[in-house]
Every structure is written in structure tokens, then in C-alpha cells.
Amino acid sequence: MRRLPLVIALSLLTGPALGQDQADKPDPDLEGAKSVLKQYLDTLVKGAEGKKPKPADVAKKLQTAKKFIHPKTLELVAAQEKKGQVSAPMAVWFHANKDYWLQEVEVGEARKSALGTVVIETREKNWRVEESGEDGEAEADSYLLAKAGGKWVVVDKRRNETFNDAAIKAGYRDYLEAEKKEPEKKEPEKKEPEKKEAPKK
Image (cartoon, rainbow, N blue to C red; front, side, top):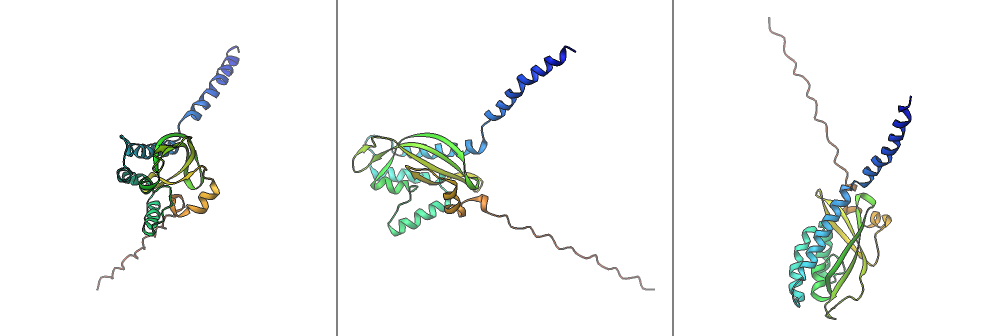
């Protein structure tokens, strides 16, 4: 009879610990998206390394960042480049030639958002081409990531603001695999069994 209270006490001690272990497990989607963003940002920072890098050289190096960017985002940037009016923040190679490039970055919180996306906050300092100097203060930026072709890619960036669920649903529906319906599988047509003719007598 004395063992019963001891068993209950032990179960109370181990119960919360097990729940805590499950809560501490990293989310594979958040970890995967964050890993890709870090690689992307590392590519941008490394593209501007060296003493007094020339904007044209930085712009050329930043072309390699395209492999981390969503295909539809690249299509949008290409269309803007044809018009000569590029506003998309993901066109880092274009902005580096005339305006700015990433100098320092700190990756912050990652959270799941609408339609299977992940939003990641950053704090960034840019090098300004015209001023020939770095930003005095870091700006709070935000990146939207989603899966394309089974892998995480960067969809878009917002400077000095973040993404919310409503904006993602309204503006990025066509980008996201979560919205793509799988084509219905057609059932194979059933062949009727061939009728065997009765042997002639």
C-alpha cells in the first residue's frame, strides 16, 4: 500500500518533463526556412567583401543569390528590369549597382504564417553607394519564405515592416505550393472480359 503514493509522485515529476522535451524539439519547417535564409544573407554579405568594393563588382557577385529566390519573384524582377523601373527589394544585384547592398545582418525570430509560409525577422545595416558609408542604425526587416519544387526559397522582403497573414493570402497565393491542388487521378478504364466463343460442334 505504501508504493502507490510513491508511483503517483514519480509520475507527477516525470510528466511535465516529458512535455517540456516535446516543446523543446525544433520545428523542421522553421529550421529549414531559417537555414536557407541564412545562406542567402551570407551570400549577400560575402558578395560585398573586400576593400572598397566597386558597385558593379558587387552587383555581379550578387547574381549568385538568385538560386535562393522564388522563381516567380525572379520573373517579377526580370519584368521590372525590362521596363527599367526596378522596385522589388529582392533585386539585390540591381540595387547594389546604384543604391545599396547588405553590410551587416542579424537573424531574429521565425514564425509560421499563412499558406505554409515562414516569416523571419532581421535587423540589417546597408552600405550606401552615394554616401560611401554604412547606415547609422539597423533597420527592422522581414522575409517571407515558402517551398517551391520541394525546397525552401525566399519569396519577398519588406523593409521596416513585417508580413501578416492577410497580406500573404492576398498577394502571394499564386506563389505557394500549399494552394496548388493536385490533379485528380483518373481511374484506369475497366476492360470487359472477352467473350469466348462456344466451340463449334
